[in-house]
Image (cartoon, rainbow, N blue to C red; front, side):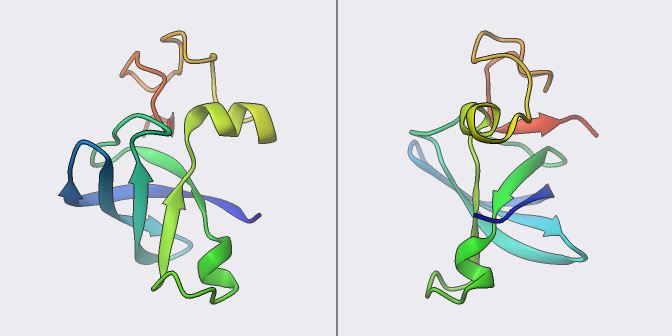
Length: 102
């Protein structure tokens, strides 16, 4: 799995289950999906961790990255703060997918 940081630039679509956002990562803007069943909503200017594996390997996702939920990041990579207890360090106090404040 390849994980890279990105900054949310625009919310393109939002429902109760999904956000589609434009993110700036590695010098370009790409779309990313944020599945809300896995993590909390993100906002413009939030820094998030993105799973870019499918795009990098051209697996047919249509060029879309995926936002990695904060809990998965803490468990698998050691990034993030807190454990969904409101101490995520993102200013939201909700354990959301945001990893850093800009």
